[in-house]
Image (cartoon, rainbow, N blue to C red; front, side, top):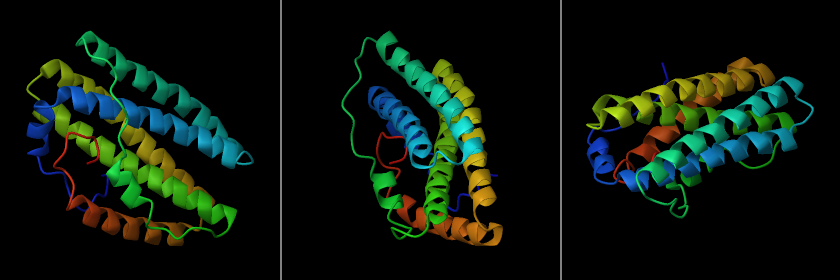
Length: 193
């Protein structure tokens, strides 16, 4: 369903289980960055009314997810750690060339967002199925559904605002590029790394 070309090695969950505090901190920042992305799309493309409306709803949802993760950190007696650079996203956003028309820039940003959400969804599914902590597994199962909805929303907007055939071609190329990135990742206690 997600179209990812390279699935996450299930052994990644073993790394996560030994580093729950780190994964929750990384996850909290992922939710914060998703909130920032939605706000940035509103600021950069205010003339796309339907997109703006959806991004407003997304901001509310993503910040509520941040709170849920942050609350879980606090419940464990921890504090939110410092943010680290998301190696996955840093590499991913090098795919499309900078510049182009406003529409092209929008489509590229939407495709990046769709792919990040798709990978998050895939990782959350894995956590929901493989974590020994059943309460935490259920937490990730619930979040997985939201990520799947976000993925389809972003991809749908890219197809709506760009030429469908061209967008689908770019999407497939981006998926291939992402698979190459993922070959070197999956060895750290981060949502995407």
